Image (cartoon, rainbow, N blue to C red; front, side):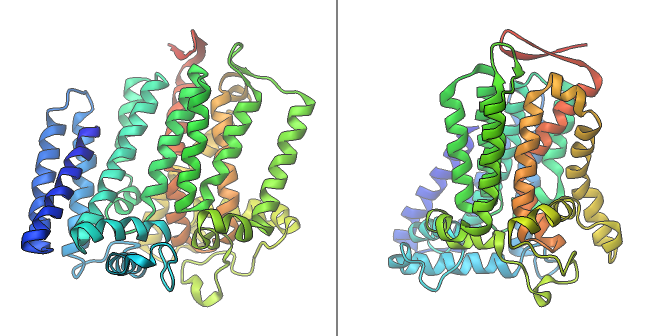
Length: 432
């Protein structure tokens, strides 16, 4: 699928050179992107793969939603498109005009996402559709990476089909891939990181493991909440034995892991802003810790009076906030049709795999150490995000970053429920 990104690069070069003679033109950009979309659609239609229609649908639905967000927002504004998306766009435009602000970001917001689009606009002009289209391609790429992971895991074809359909038409994933927000960037790097982590899990290539860690850090540059994934990866690295294909615990390793995990969360509560802020960007860290004020919580707020500011409060309230974060809006907080729709089209994706895991935990512990590792990664991220989120709308945006892990986990859990899982010759096999 690299060819699709090559198409985009050619489009950027075309707009760069046309700018030299015709100036920056939104009409030219629109025509170029329409031609690019046509070229991509033809390529996907001719793609020799049994799931090519799903891939084509994944691209087209995101492209159509992008066009709507740019040219039909006066009819209906897509969820989460508005204040933040306009902020990112305006700051990217400012950076393109005043490149000296790239290093200082003085008076600007948006972090690296604004900087990426600012650099892009510097070369082609403030053409919004060009920035949007990156998100479309990233969202499509997430679907394709999920496919590659499921193939790597030797998941049953029927399960792969339904998981790809879920990844393709998951409403919030479509929207986040179509509007001018940064959310799809960390989702993409989380998916890519997961691919290399599972590659290590199956083939024991140490380079794959460290590459997966590196990609988590890249995702963290866009939003540091996903850094919790590293705990799940570290758990697998410490306890998974490739020779026996099992988890092997020792008192020393277990104590070390628990200690490191505790320090990790205390570090985020007390020192995240001071230390990570310089490495990841203050905006990303503030997103975790900034407890919204009552006036900023909005109508979709939950647990309004609960805040977490120290380890003791984390132990007491963390699990409760985590449950609300992963499942909001819960029925007792429903205000109307949109909340009900969000619960059944978004929250369920996160609740269902966790419930299956809990119900089958004994069997999974014996047969599927990979799922346990991913469960730890997910729970770690949920706890980090839950610290500063008390609003269903914000929760929906943030948990989107974990969609690849949830879908891959769900695929494995479905196969576990239907089959006996074994490991042979370094690869996960399914005995019918």
